[in-house]
Image 1: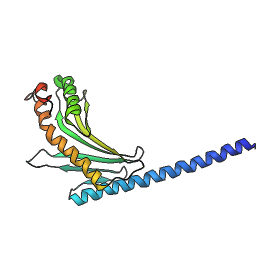
Image 2: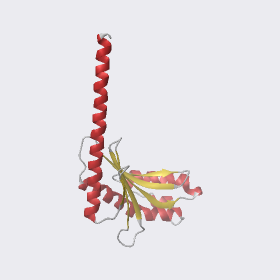
Image 3: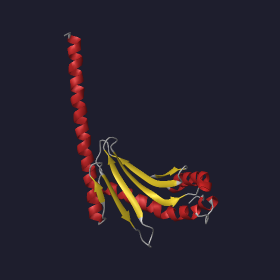
Image 4: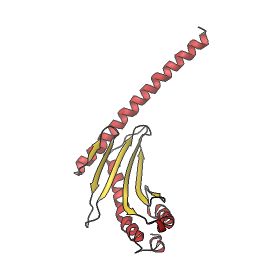
Length: 180
């Protein structure tokens, strides 16, 4: 075997070990982030269900003033090293409002939301709030996990009633699209 081929094979072997080590590091780091998230929920007294296989939790929360029950899903994405909270908005926009609803959602995303954003599907009329925190090469504290939840809860508390009223024709797009 030529010297060049031997060097190439040795380099490939080192890369393979490196990739395995990187995958193991990512896995361990994701487990730590997931455990931190669960500790934050435990410390907050929030009951939740877990899926340890995909590092996700789901819980429901009813805010003050008998708000609608809100669903929250939080997942630690091992491959992307990203903690993502999503919460569906309990509204389906009627077919005749779906294009205009895209403008309303865009307005809210730009002017009303400081952190996170609404995802909107104009085909289905479904909307969800999403906020993320990358954890590549850094630690995620319970405070960061708590912030994701608090930011989502605050945003949904301020907007979901308006979106519901808009979907039912009780508010116009012009009434919602007012800068704060």
